[in-house]
Image 1: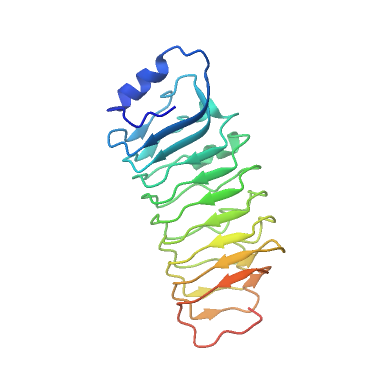
Image 2: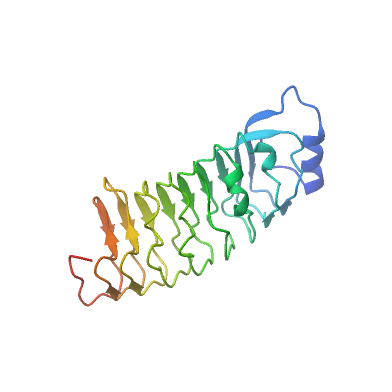
Length: 230
């Protein structure tokens, strides 16, 4: 269902207050909308979706319970290139089939720790996050892809990327990282990729990176010397 042309949150709510032949929809889409700034609780009525895609708009806030009507059906949440300052990531454990979360290109400064038994792909690029808490990804056992490039990250703590056994792709390029401590990364053993290019790295502790078997990108940093056993 494409609601890109609605002119207010009230109009959006009124659409889903109507009776439809079914309450189940494959996709909710809103692209380029310049009116809807908040998704509030109950805005979708009893309608459920497999995908919620809101892009290139002014959405600034997703209220708690706004998407919980789709708790059993929702697989993909894509809220990219908006003005998000708040997203209720603490509700993610309630989504039983979610596999992808993309909040790229917003204004998020923090999120609650991600907890999910099904989530495989998280993209947070181009948000002023500043930091990733050490336990941010420690309860996402199926996670394979994580990207947080251009997020003003200044440090990575020991253990931040070591508790997701399926993790095979991490992109932290274009940040402000200067040092990697021992035990910062441990990726899945086959065809894994770590991108650290365009940071300010000058030092990497021995044992900082484990499991990268396919591609390690570290160009455009400030290394004077880099040892093979990092």
